[in-house]
Image (tube, rainbow, N blue to C red):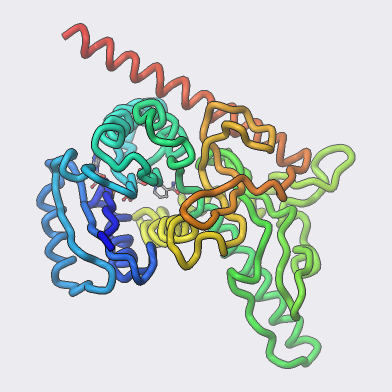
Length: 377
Ligand code: NAI
């Protein structure tokens, strides 16, 4: 079988450095799929990129890696790409407005869209990680009009996994302390496979809506509602925040919802570097659930940034948003119609959608401005 051609932009960056070994060890596309890896970065990063290529060679990866090409030539990198992992973007600099950042990255995504349209495989599967990830997907979809919209996704799996990690931490400490208190046998620790029903809705920003209202844990051989393991409704953000109540709320500053939203900043503050390892792991999970022959069609519902066109949740069309999906065999996905939104989730999601629509309008305006300036030279 011909190797799978995969392009990673931002190949000399932090996330790529953690992601390449996962791909090269067969943990992303499956152990039997050989990968022909193309690492792209910009010319100022050429030396760093060459260093990464030396390390790949020194690591003797042979399980899944057929070959690796490190290049600053965009056409060479994108030609024939069957999977594109878009990490390359303009970082936020001190004093830079959020809207300037959106404009800069819209220009980069326009170029990526043109490259996908012209040089990649017509069925190329894309995951956008560079921020603003969902709005970048929208820009790509305009400049790669032949690519099916369902092939363009963005990463919200890191937020999803952060939420599950926090739930597991809390659930396990409660189960262990309960079993110690009643003198019962050592309790089985729950793992990610023992959690279902979690979802991140909306933008990959502070307006995202982490939703645990339908979460269940697999305890003692059966699925039980979240509150039977973690009864703290305030921490979960499940305390009544609307008249009539019973709905998820954003909750107080120290709630799970706020902790998920601020986790990236917390890692940055602690490490003085961004959360590259967990981001790389989340990209690996996103891609393997979607595309690997072993996992696609067998995974539970996951959060992915996808087109809102035709969604069953009532989210405005014409943007990309994090929504619950199920990946199906053969590299496709469907919205998970089993999820329904509580009134409070819908209210918070509406605010996130307004933000996504503003980002889209800003990105389009900045691209128009750049095109007008280029035309007047
Ligand atoms: P980084 O700054 O270490 O690496 C980015 C790389 O992209 C650099 O090597 C840079 O030279 C390269 N680059 C810039 N413009 C390019 C272009 N036009 N073509 C090809 N390469 C280009 O950043 P890191 O930590 O690897 O993060 C990558 C992106 O992922 C950032 O935008 C970050 O905000 C985003 N991110 C998104 C997350 C999500 O959950 N959606 C989570 C974590 C990070």
